[in-house]
Length: 231
Image (tube, rainbow, N blue to C red; front, side):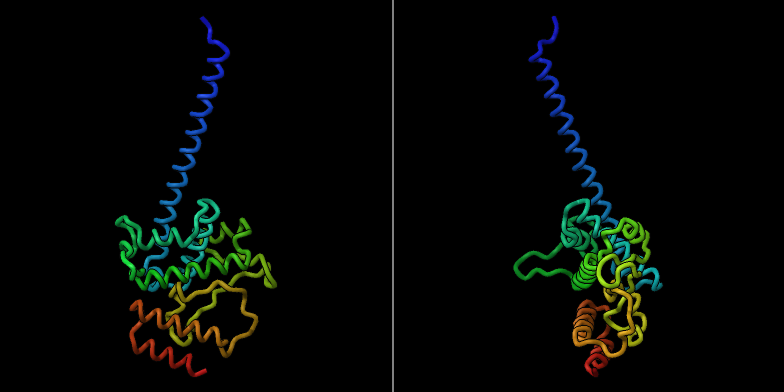
């Protein structure tokens, strides 16, 4: 006895539904694996030792660029916000979280070092978006390799991005290896000299954040504040 047309249609529809469910489940699983890998990679790149104690300038810069590639991947391929994944990096509920679980309660706050690292990464992520860096596939490959990207938007389009520092390394040697001190920027067009009011304010705020996170001692913070108050 053969299969009736109605039964055949039901089998085909059922098979199609099963395949569709399997495809959706596979995509979800692949995204889950990707997210776990990104979190793991960012925990290496955003580790306090990497962020504040890089052995070489090039190591710090490379880590920043690689982090930018991952933050872009979070938005482009996972359709999530970078700050959401950074919370998992810093305060996830697994033992790999860099700063343990987030405190609970109305007065709960993130670890000061986590705040400092996270703000620096998100600041640079926004700068990369503004400069059109993520719009170019070659840039994405360079970022993932820790290499300097090319600006693709604005008056400095097609120029290599540079690193500007919140605290001038000539004032505080070694600060060029502090990743949160770095800002991915257009090339310097010779506007050096006296910092702007905004740059002074930003530097003083950053000094306070470094002290609160116990990255620098009080006397270092006071010396840096005196420098930026002298303008």
